Length: 129
Image (tube, rainbow, N blue to C red):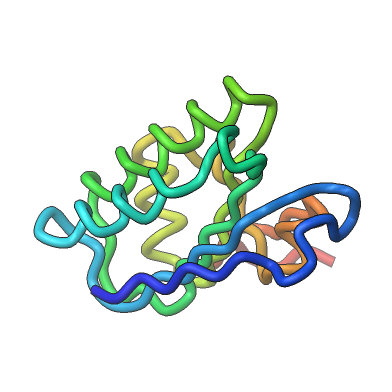
């Protein structure tokens, strides 16, 4: 797994500081420590309480990774912030739903939607006109 961490070049965009973490590859028990380390690098001490995690290039995700995301979400909420996920894979939507975290981590189609708080139907949801 490779985790790239990018902080927005204008940290005051939309009147808020945020950080973007883009994850590529497998995110399972053997690689979750990398994600935990990357997510622990942000927080109220840096003035960043909003985190966007882009999972669009993740090829595998398991419950250990979901636990790390849940922990980051709890910490962000305590500081008045949030964690938002960008994902397009049905398997991620299904894993979050099975863990009953689909309301905590609704689907955001892209970075702009996540920053604005605009959600999308989970991947695999039938389109209704």
